[in-house]
Length: 204
Image (cartoon, rainbow, N blue to C red):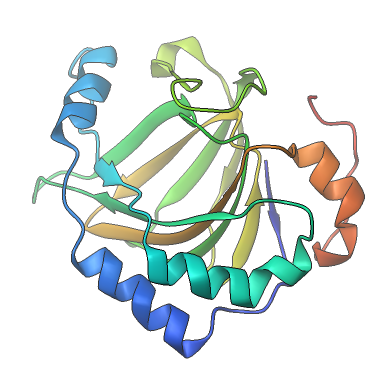
């Protein structure tokens, strides 16, 4: 599940630092190989990294901590790269590896029709390294498809299985991770930041 938020956009200084980190990001070839193997080499998985950076962390605290008092904000820059020229790539179905909830601000789309797809399975709310899971496409059923707008904030339930589809080039995301709040709790506590208040009957 994703919800559009009315939080302020990053400052020009923070925006420039996000691009600095994105432009200097590398590749995670081991993860790509693992995702391709899980999906029986029938997909072209992206390579992606989420580097953290001291300057971005400081600017994030300065600009966004006041909106989430009492919560530790863990900012990073998500860089999803398609490494094949003549074929679109995907980030196959997965629940995130460490965090349980996230805010994403989309900087660069990465293709004409990139989609974020949510499926009918969830994983636990145990946070920390190694708590994510990966799935094959034939193990899940599509629930909702989103086409995100650039320069816009979204809240994501990253413990619901999701994928990113049809990446053509490089997709760039400024993301703030949370390890101690779920999507349901976020909606209940920070409903004033949500553009449309949803039904609260969500998976806990």
